[in-house]
Every structure is written in C-alpha cells, then in structure tokens.
Image (tube, rainbow over all chains, first blue to last red):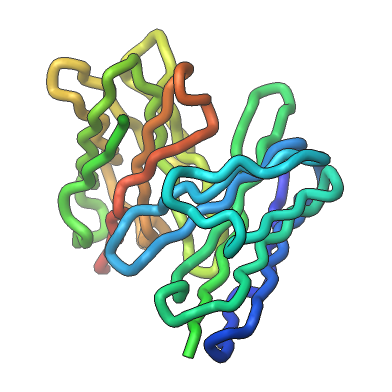
Length: 116
Length: 115
C-alpha cells in the first residue's frame, strides 16, 4: 500500500533555531499534502494545505512566516519551524492525498518537536 | 464550523469483549465521517469512512460504525477485541463543502486490551 515517510520522528532544539520536517510519499505522487499539529490532550489541528508548485494555504491563526511550507516536488513537502520557541513544542504530522482508484489520505508517523 | 467529540481518552476492555468507542460530531452541512487508527510509531491508518448511502459502515479488522444523524454520532464498534487492537483511535469529520480531505479530528481514544 501507499506509504508516507516523515522525518525526523523526534527532534529537540534550542529556542531560536529553525527545524525542518520532511514528508515524503514513497510510492505515489501527491499533488496535495496536509500539515497537522497536535498539542497534548488536544485534537490534531490542520495547519496548512500544501500544493505542489504553488504557495501553501494556511489555516486561520497559523503564522505563515513562522511555519514555512515548501512542496517543490510531487513526492516531497517540508515544514520549517523558524525561530522555534518552547510554545512551538508539539506533535507535527503530515498527510498526502492519494488520487488512486479511491481518493485516500495517507499519514506520516509524525514528528515530536521539543524546543528548550 | 465542524467539530468532533470523543468521549473517554482511554477505554479498557478485556480480550474477547465488545469494543465501543464513542464519537459525536457537529456539522452544519452533511458530514463525511472517518475513523483512523494509529499504532505506535506509525502513521494514522483509515479504518472506515461514511460519505453517503448505507449508514452502517464496515471497515478493516472487523470494525464497524453507524452514522446516526438524529444523534449526531458515529460510534466505532467491534464485537470481540484482540490484543492487536490496542492503539489510538481518532474520529474525524469533513464535508463536500469544506473539502473531502480537510479533516477535523477528535482528541483521540486510547484503547487498552487486557488478556
């Protein structure tokens, strides 16, 4: 079946540094990828929709200058958390839209970001 | 706006017992409803979904869910739990209006299965 690979699975960084998270569709092309964030004991919240070759669409309240999304190819989307602060510590997860016989979403395994 | 409420952050059952995970949704338009499962260190995997048509939906691994519009519910059930069912389960909602794949998730329910 279709697989989405997300790296790294866990990252710890110092406040003020930037962190890049990669989301790859391994055996299919994804024109659309989605980025979610989950704070402890809260729901997965959609942050942005990433479309290959165009600018991402951010949900209300998500700072586009802080969370940079690049979807330069049909198999790779990256999320860069710029100048990370402790309040950015969260679980980030991506998904890719598979337009096969049946449209489906496939999810990465997530990245736990801890900002010290 | 759409929202999902999952009652119980943890549900414990014995192996062989009925599994019931509750999900209530709020939507001003006809909803699409989903259940996803997440095993440790893996991505979310679709268990089943309701879009239109038959309200009782069967999914993988023996799970099923019933869409009850009058109760705004989409509870997940399995007649007999297996140890391998232990995982985190997420209910989600979307719609044709918002975009099929723009999901709003519940907070998740961790299913614990004891021997």
